[in-house]
Length: 212
Image 1: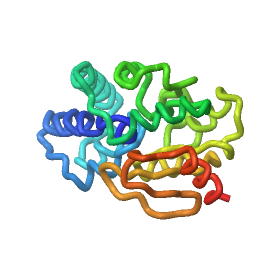
Image 2: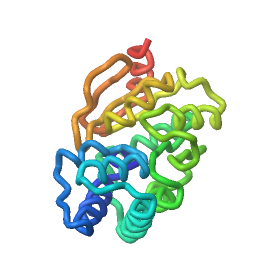
Image 3: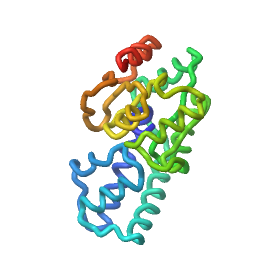
């Protein structure tokens, strides 16, 4: 969702930088890039470690509450689409393919994204707080495939971050990578595009063939 279908990573960036400022710290671009695509708890752990703040249970709880409140504020307004994303979702639906929204974002926040995206584009959705382990572990993708009633190896994931790409690959999916905020390294089973503009059903099939 974030950075793949919606240009919402910038909203998380605002909230995380403000959180660092609350601790009189500055969030560098280098540190910010380390937790793009991470689950909420992992992102907070990386942030606290990176800015030199002890991640006490109370501090982490307060930080989590601040991030959820601030991102909720930011997501209640219009969220811009990533280039070609809406057409790509329409393509999948028109082709009669099953689809799932798979995100590390917690359910309460993902619902705001679904308000923009449209729930009719998806058969199911799986969020980071609905599985034991978020990305880069494969749990969210395995759960989505289970709910769709398909083999993960018959699925094509579309991802924008190294974290998400690792999760999809670990689940056995072919992956179309469209980097957003940071580069994603090449690897087996990965097809790369600049945007989703012009995506075709044939491209999805080719991604599966390339995965092998």
